[in-house]
Image 1 (spheres, one colour):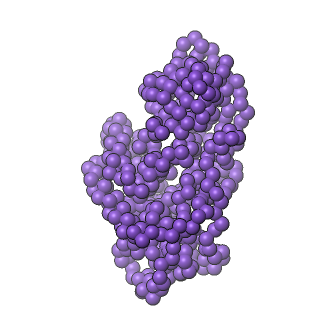
Image 2 (cartoon, chains in turn purple, brown):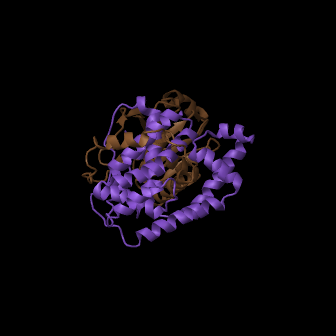
Image 3 (cartoon, rainbow over the protein chains, first blue to last red):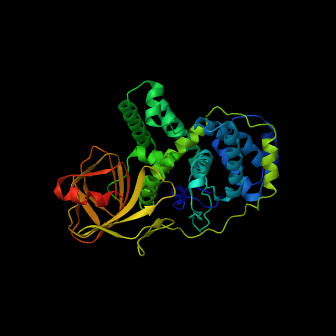
Length: 218
Length: 212
């Protein structure tokens, strides 16, 4: 199940074109533990899963993202066992929906973040839902990845990193707590020993700043 | 499109922390606003970067092998048949895709509402309002926040003119005295936290009906 309102995905997904097979290299890479992976590499791994159900690529994605999704969900106050279960589920969804990934539209990390986010919403609401809908509103047209997409994806992630560095430490802290970890403003105020109004205005300024810096990202 | 949700609201939507009712209003706006779709994508990219740079927590032994074993039971990830895009708001039938709607009910002369049943019961109530051209909505303020997306027609208040697709992301401090545009019937989708406080004689009279 996916979050209802978030399921209306305004044509986000288009088919990613498969890139030439590099199975040997992928296999080798998957053996390495925690080697830093570039956005382009991560995107290629998803595309390899889409193009030919490449299990080595899946293993590499699992090793990179599952422990991060688990960590993310634990930050949102899920117990470790539940976070691990959802991280597993998230990677299975990556396998299932790899063909919908389109690096021209979103980076690998953003795409997988939205999968983890939807799982988190569903987990919170699981028993409250009356019905299941097919909420994949996707384009039927197959669009090849434009040649400049790889460059754009790399540049985009670079810009996101730069934008986050552009925030003050105080702003970054409230963004992390509020936006990423989903903490209530009141809880953040208590944790940081700040007035509620300060927390709210800090979040507002930080989000406006990010929007200014990244508004033309896509 | 001239009026958009606040950046905090879009960010909460991107993070998945906005409640279902407000998410529905935002999703309705997004289906009509490319600019805000871009903003949500940017905030999702921020989420992706935070996910990527988080300190990982090791999965338990055998987790990866269990996932691989599960893949055998998965159907081949061939490109799924993709349905045509569907906007949330179905203008011809005046329905919201995927949500049950209550019947239109009379509130006051020229004003009707219908409840939108969201799966998550919470402090946010979601409903549609339909008002005849030229109607003055009684002056009101809120004890909580109110997020509105115009589905059809237009209304005007201190903040300007709000036409189809426009979003009014109001705080509790904002007092409202909207008037419906003269041209056509106006339908709005509203997610409201807290209670609406109607002021004036007329407002107090219809107050019981507004508590949906």
